[in-house]
Image 1 (spheres, rainbow, N blue to C red):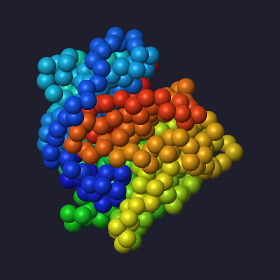
Image 2: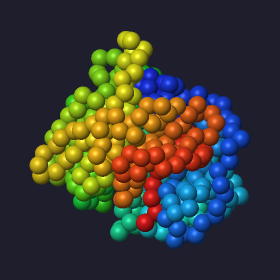
Image 3: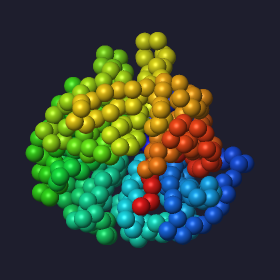
Image 4: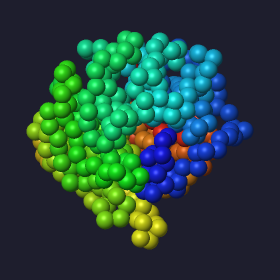
Length: 381
């Protein structure tokens, strides 16, 4: 992670209690090695690794057997994935990975074998793909912030679009790219925190508009709803003093904010009409944290919130919420189509982290050792 990511996790308390990422190590606990075929039902876990440690990795959980393959990328290629991974997409027949510290976008097959890569997008952050037209889009902090358009086949850089300072999240809806601007280097001076989402024509790569969210530093969850993809959840980390953290829902059809929340949604997953969110909000004045878990429902009936994280019968004190509160540093959430919930825990950010699996009713299923700082999870199709 770059300085901005370290700064945000130190200050906002995204369950990080600061990134002690300059050191690295491994526990004696080893996952079960089980090289599985591409047809297996898999959850891919991208482990960020430690800053400067060159130990980012790609773990795979076989959903049928419960076995874990520690790092399919290094096994398939005979070399490490790189320094500080930042995002993963699992597509129909390939995987795209952004490795921020190494300034690399890596395209692999479903067993982790490298197909193509590029260093044409330095300080790469987040990814979205247009598989139908064969393009990959990536945000970058370089050159004051831009979006890169690349060939999904060979990672060739096609064009760029200048957006706001230090852009993070990116999604694609009906030919338009929506890009979260953070201004995350504001703590260095030179500019302030951003509060806009840039709208970019994906074909021409021209900025066609901006959406003012009314909240600063759009860092964290940036996720479309599964059932209603026109609804986009946007987290705002705030400026840590005068502007508190929060979240908004944007309607991508009208390019407008339709709901604002006074709670943040740092990590989020979607199932059906709902977003499931986790965050620990930092208060600089008290040097304390406020814990948040919420379910946000969207759709024709309006937008509503409920407590809890279990898709079936969730409550403010369901089994998943209880477990999350006891974790060292929750750092990601993913929900499978059957309602199974997976929560990543980075622990001490130095030794290997873990992924906790729960049933749709919140019951505990299993815990799996993965890599250092697990932060991103995706399902094969």
